[in-house]
Image (cartoon, rainbow, N blue to C red):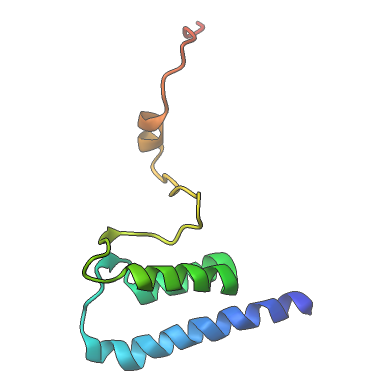
Length: 104
């Protein structure tokens, strides 16, 4: 029961972002400098990290979304995390070779 109550703030915040997407965003046009858009980023951050961390990440992203801020691909990651590499070949390319000779 208590665990279900912890999801309520997350769901409320996601609902508010979705309302923004449906009501306000269509009138503003496409102006986000990042992918995913700031509202998509907020929903992903809330889903991944919960209400508190997700809200902080979304707020930080909105502050960075300005003419003097960054641009490009920017997935929601908590501080110190690195993006997961999905492709096995890419992961092998990034793995440094070991100094040990191969055993046969």
